[in-house]
Image 1 (cartoon, protein in one colour):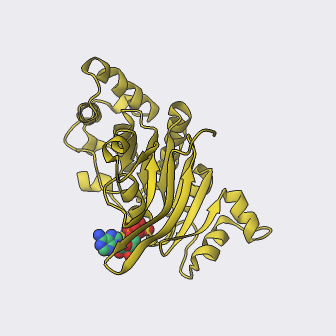
Image 2 (spheres, helix red, strand yellow):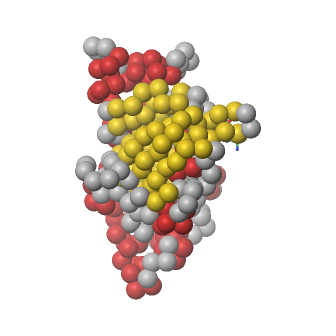
Length: 267
Ligand SMILES: Nc1ncnc2c1ncn2[C@@H]1O[C@H](COP(=O)(O)OP(=O)(O)OP(=O)(O)O)[C@@H](O)[C@H]1O
């Protein structure tokens, strides 16, 4: 984990009217690091991702991704990132292979390289046996893994995952974690993810930032944050301490509103 940060933000702010959704965010993510953004609903996590993926201009402050400025060099930023949004991005009426082919063309991968890239991506995501099946027959976890494969075909230096496992059952969630880890170790890409699942953050992320009303309330490794809260503290204790949560359930909250029944919607 050395070299220049692949993501660096300085006093990044985003306002909607008079409301400040992201307030003076300063953080950096190292090459190959899995970094988690945590926070309650409305804390500003998706807004951070939208700014860093150049979908939303910041109000003030600055940020670089892959060394490129998100405001001055958005095309260069887009070329070195992959983004899996919360919303469904796979087409149920195409096979897994066909979905990946669409993205291979979109990313301008040379015709002669496409088949091999697609096969590699399917293998990394554990989907080789399902390449020729229609995506509407996939489980929610498989769809998520396909979407991650889609977004990493061009081997981005930085991958953004916005709630990669929301709405998945625990078994599917663990399979997504395993493939994300495998992807990270094989590709060396840095991954910035948002999640509501504290065990997911603790399991996957080297470091996390806990956002509260758009501000960083705490940042560090899960072990450092637990130690800062006190002997015997759990990661749930850390979250509650820094978000002031009083309705927090262990592991997840407000799941109903967030649940993304991807397989169902495709069916
Ligand atoms: N386009 C917009 N116009 C006005 N307000 C917005 C807009 N986008 C986001 N917000 C507000 O900014 C705040 C942060 O939203 P954001 O979606 O970034 O939160 P989040 O932490 O990702 O939440 P969740 O966990 O529910 O996805 C919220 O109060 C939201 O209502």
